[in-house]
Image 1: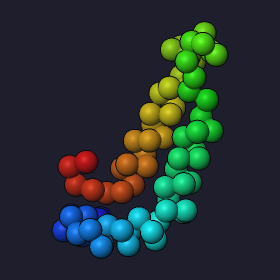
Image 2 (image 1 turned 120 degrees about the horizontal axis):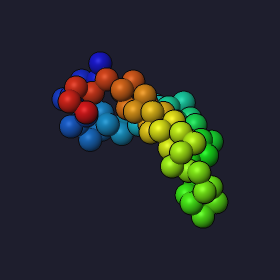
Image 3 (image 1 turned 135 degrees about the vertical axis):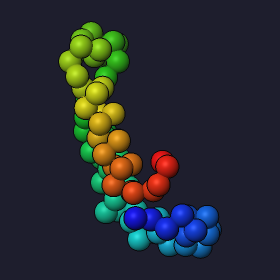
Amino acid sequence: MVDAAKILDKEATLSYVDAHWESWFIAGLSDFIRTPNLTPMVDPDYLKNGLIEKAIQLVDDYVQKLEIKGL
């Protein structure tokens, strides 16, 4: 679990982000981008095909892995 006191510490936060930027944040963003949750301009079935839900679940899974209490 992430220590909330460290999150409020600017240097600790910067260190955490630097340590996890490629392996966590870029990887997560890349996973999200690969999920084709499109708009009606390019996918008329975007509200029916479940891809928006898949993208939301992906984001939620990443947030939950951070284990920040109350987030």
